[in-house]
Image (cartoon, rainbow, N blue to C red; front, side):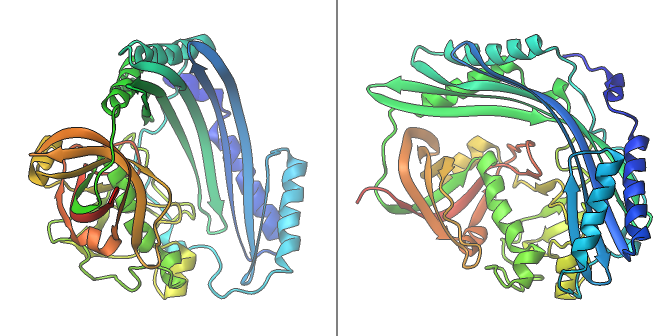
Length: 451
């Protein structure tokens, strides 16, 4: 899995892409646009999927795209093309300009404020191409799946293993004079298998994803973890309906934080469609909860120097001592609310939830008796009211230790109560996303099972 840094040369130099964007900006301004922005992306990748020892798909992707938004006063229109030839770009710019003359005026539309544009570019180390021939990628996928199938005789079937390699470059520019390029890679290995015992069948999966292939878990370990998780779920049973503590494993705990960030997003706030409406400055978590953002972590999936509007990202606190410090705003929602963009036009950038100093096992001991959730199903979350109700599977915990597997139950509460009910945050942090957190233990939820 040796890296070759010079493989960035697989793409034309970023300057050629920046030139395309700059020319598109000039074309729009020549046609009378008072403001204009454009984004270009070029990516290439290889994906291999195997199932039961055979190759199911080998797919090579190569995608190009240019999107342009023009503003004639407060009238906005957008157009895009996958063809980067000069004539196609010219027609795309003309189409956007023609459409703009027919759109409604919106006093909040327009580029982000010029003084917010990013000027300092941190070295984020996001580009690590994985130079493998297709056969080597196939071999990795087969190794992953074979490791899972050979882990235990109770593993009887496979939903497949996959290995994905992707590298790309993106450019964003606008008529404020902002023009920057970014090279990024993203690679992953995943596996899902089926186990059987006493007529009961269960499936589970595992994966790893990252910028740098040298830092990915081995294909064998991904497969073995998928198999181990599947075996642990065999002979699952339901629970009686009850109130009990609930703990979310890290890969699901980030979703709980995701409901919070959605609720304090600018669009939810100005549309008055949030259970945390007007909650800036309010304590919604216990006072030990600290949630902060670090956009400049090297090689992290959420790292960025600027957002989708060129606004500089910044490190800082989103929740301090349980109190919401600010909303997550792009320029449009900021203007709707009479505020200023916070650099979140492309979402959050490496949110980190500080732990309470306990390991996963120590969090189980603190729970003593309750339900560990390892899988969620359905989409029963109402972001307007905060009502939360989702199908779940996992394990019953007794005396601080994992007991039998659990399936076909529903967990329910209100998100406000869930946030206030957090009692522990584990140090078993999962780095595979833009939200980094450990397991989250909540003191009480309704578990709906059998009567």
